[in-house]
Image 1 (cartoon, rainbow, N blue to C red):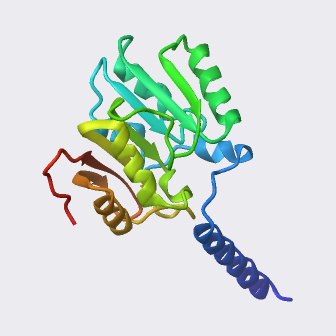
Image 2 (cartoon, helix red, strand yellow):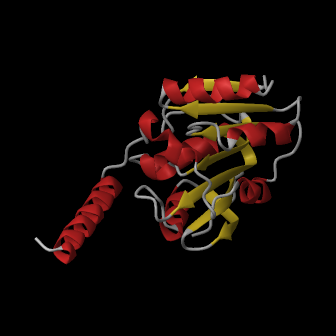
Length: 211
């Protein structure tokens, strides 16, 4: 087999693997945490702050916290009176995030192990909720978005960050459709086709979602 043929075979295999991952959403395993820590140009922490607009003293939730790459700066933005709840399906991820927080003297982070489609929090518990490169790992994205809407107070912010070249990335059009089905109103986004942050708000009684 020549070099060109081998290259085509490898490339074809990579495409098949990428597509298989896209059709079979699963949480990223702990062994791949280094990928989470790598800076990504389209879903930066600066852009997250721009779209999330955190206010000192607020109560926020991050779903799919991973290694804490976004959680640690977010909790700093909230100040000592704020609270950041962090949720992940993997205890190892939560332990890593909490270890990194304590190493920095951060104590107002509350971890919980759970599923994005069945959040272990009461209604209206948070001012805002966000997740980055996580929604596409959930089999029922609309159900997850309904849960995010449930745990923020009416008018609360729901921010979704996505890398579309990731096998689990969610294209913006798909997100808009799922969000409308979950009764979330689109407010705006930062970024383009390759990666973005989008902000939605939970609807108050009598409001109508945007298509």
